[in-house]
Amino acid sequence: MRAQSSAEFMIAIAIMGIALVPIMTAMQWNSQSSPEKMMLAKASFSADRLRSAVDSVGALGPGARLTAQVEMPQVQNISAQGREISIGLDTSFGPVDITQPTRFNVTTSGFERIRAEGRYVIDVKAGTGPDDPNVKLVLR
Image (cartoon, rainbow, N blue to C red):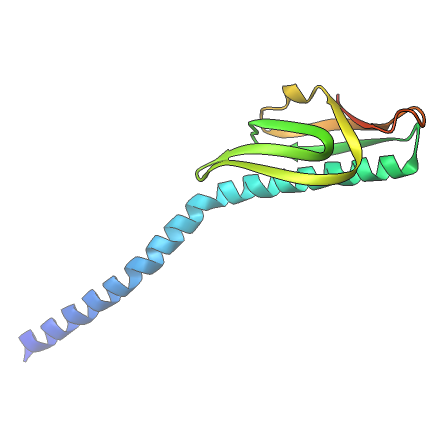
């Protein structure tokens, strides 16, 4: 009788172990992708914050000015041309661009210095008159 109950016990333990393998694999995969999700969320939030600042300053008109502080992840490139702001990231899935459209034309100054992760202060300035409809983003 003892041998039979031991065999049944071992079979039950083996079945539970097999059932736990997919759960543990999913948990491991999910924990590895968390930093990448955080990087994508930071970049998306930063692009949206810059878009909001550009739209606000552009709507206020000539001479308007605003300062925005954004927290950037490690980026491959960041650009603002025409009517869009784009942040390029390198992920395990390959390169990803996060783009936000703006209502006003945008130009930049100093954005080539944004590479490392960290907080950046950016001045958002409207054009000086009706002949200058652009909004300029200037990295401090």
